[in-house]
Amino acid sequence: MRNNSSLTDNQRIIFELTNCQGKLTWSDNFLEINFKLSCRRDGSLLVSCDPIPRSLQSNKFEMDRDSTQSRTVQQYTLTGLGPDGVQIATKYASVSVEKLISQSNFIDLELSIQYLELDWQSTKTDVSREIIALEYQIPGLECLGSIEVEAPFGKVGVAGATKVEDYRELTGIITITARPNPNLPEATQLKEIDSAVRRLLDVLSLAEGRFMEWSIRNRFSDDQIRSGVFRGPKHSSEPRYPLFSFLNLQPVVKLAVEQYTEEQREKTGLDVAIKWFLIRSQYTEIQCPGFSDS
Image (cartoon, rainbow, N blue to C red; front, top):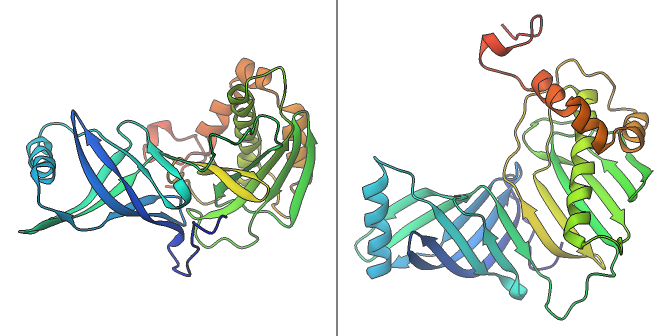
């Protein structure tokens, strides 16, 4: 991590960006805010705003929120800048109000974010020729030691915890080191790598007996983070009926990387079958016979 993402000892927080400035936008309106961005251990994101002085903007924000609470959900978007010029951007409708306390001279506001992108890349930096180094953070992944496997697009690494107390917390990582493909736009190559990681997680999910998805993807260059994608918490159940032991996942990772292709996924729908098999349903009618918790 860069020095602008200060690690803390707080049990719930894995990093923070402080002294951020931005705009909270809704409909045709916006509210200027100063804030701190925090990421919890389960991948959830919280924006803690400095006290917002009373103004036409803040009054409009509060009035619009009150008028829509009983009708529709207000659609908020957040953009801004953090330390070292990091660009902060959310997707449309990915921001919700976590807490709002109204005072006579100001309002206290906290926001939760379901999707966020951070970008430290300078417009002067040419990353098209750099090695693509990615790190995906996974909740609840168990693994003994670190595993490395060669893939068609580069090198794949898997590591995780040997003792997981809370399967909602980010405990494992998948690393990808790939050379840029001159025949593909970078966005296309990143999309293909994301798909390969998804397939690997399908097989790891089946092996560990719980459905897993990545929550955070960071891109590095020269040991410095250049960009990050945060998809919020990806909670799942505790393991049930694992097919392999996490003490030896080398053959599982090798099988997934070398044999489970995108073409196979599309033709067989194996990813859907794995997800339905592993996700614990609260509805008896869609639980697999013999695998109900009741």
